[in-house]
Amino acid sequence: MKVKITVHAKPNSRQEKVEPSGGDSFVVSVKEPPVEGKANSAIIKSIAKYFKIPISFVKIVSGKTSKLKIIEIQK
Image 1: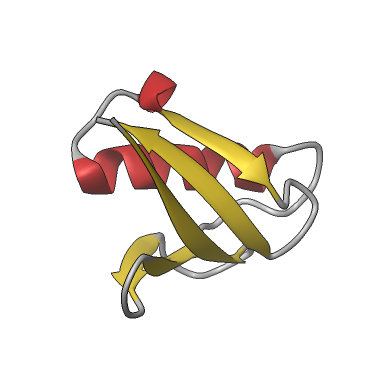
Image 2 (image 1 turned 90 degrees about the horizontal axis):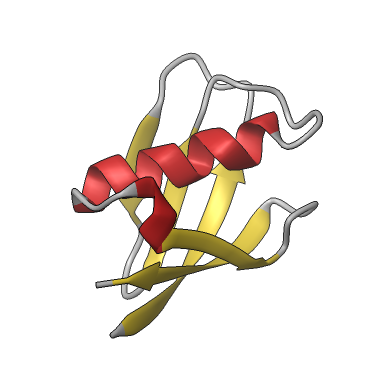
């Protein structure tokens, strides 16, 4: 089963956290800067840790260069 969620990314944050923001939307704060995919990798790791699933089950399907991302999760 695949689930899509909307993520508002906050790179360069002081602490890493995943916060639900209603429905299938989340705010993900990561310490990494949005350079060379570092923030995207950190977001994927944070989402995987939050849902307690392997990193390979999480994929950014839209918004790789945007703060608003669509992420697909396999369960």
